[in-house]
Length: 173
Image (tube, rainbow, N blue to C red):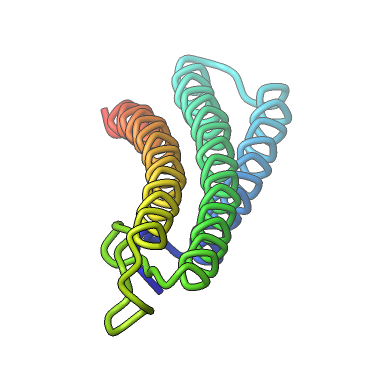
């Protein structure tokens, strides 16, 4: 393989699935805590009960927000796994077409294969160069498109990290 596109779609999808399962568990725990808090509110009153109730509300709100963010991040990772798999498939198809034209893909560039590829014919060389340029353009499009998708994913995951860090510090404070 040319290594024009890097990544493992299966691992990316698995991490996304793990985040979504964690979000589901966190959502369930927050819901259970909310139910327990409501049951206790009927039996317990006073200044301490109100203080504990406010703290519990803060935890439930943080858990709900964290669950939503983890679920969103997991979905983004799973979507990216699909994008990555499609990009890898496109590069594999390009590699096959390049090989049929006595070309190969190395380090993101379409280059002539090593060795003698035929007679020195200017028309054949011009045709191969045109095919090389065409395949290079397609490869550049695939790599650029995946790069843009990765940049959007990175920005979204950085925003999720910041939000989760804010909730974490809120809970510690």
